[in-house]
Every structure is written in structure tokens, then in C-alpha cells.
Image (tube, rainbow, N blue to C red; front, side, top):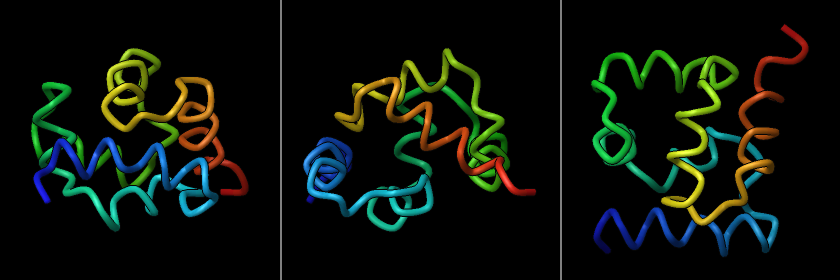
Length: 85
């Protein structure tokens, strides 16, 4: 399956309860595919993946339609990764 289809499939998986965290997304979609799609370098994107709460609203706004996950839901997924640390 190509990366665009993998990214789009995340919306279905999110709606069926299979996606709970940003790490869940990365189990299926290569980091490099998302990084390239939103214009971030691979190293910078990996750093943000290690701490998803550091994604900016603009980056989340760019990723949400690619992943077919509502912006506010993706924002909550990313922000929840920073809680409890």
C-alpha cells in the first residue's frame, strides 16, 4: 500500500478505536512520509514524534487532513502525549 493510502487509512482506524496515540499512527505510516508531506526534515520530525506535544498547531493542521483525523482530535492526541511527564 502506498504512503498516501496508509495515511488516509488512519482516519478509519481512528474512528474504529484502533488509534489512541501518535505512536499508534507511526506503527502504520512511515515517519518520513508524514515529514515529507508537511515539509519537515526527517531528524526534526523524529524529534517531534518522540515528544508529540511539541508539534505546533500549524504542523497538526497540516497532518490532520493527510491522516483523515479531525484537527481537534489530532491536537488532543498530540497534547496528551505530554501529560504525566
